[in-house]
Figure (cartoon, rainbow, N blue to C red):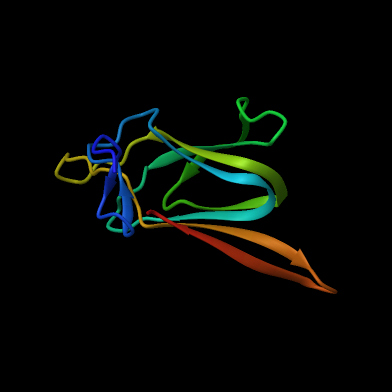
Length: 133
């Protein structure tokens, strides 16, 4: 394992290992396009950004991100207005979280969940869970 990668406790979580800063991002490539209705980054102990931006890219424009939402707040649990087809999702810090004692936590993600709608006579959802390794 590369010691420079921001991974702590392999298999348990991805951790930034420093205080959050504006412009830091977490990006996931699902390796193929999927239709997704919700993304959720499982973070604990308030170790998520205060405000963040969500962007996506598909196979045909993998290096060009399309803005989905620019003003998300709170824990990272975003439901798209309608399911979108994309391959890569990028979550960027717009405003870092700062605790009451003026300390800033590192950003940690324990799990990432995508909800993929499935249609079989009625709308069902299927969660694709990705854990840090």
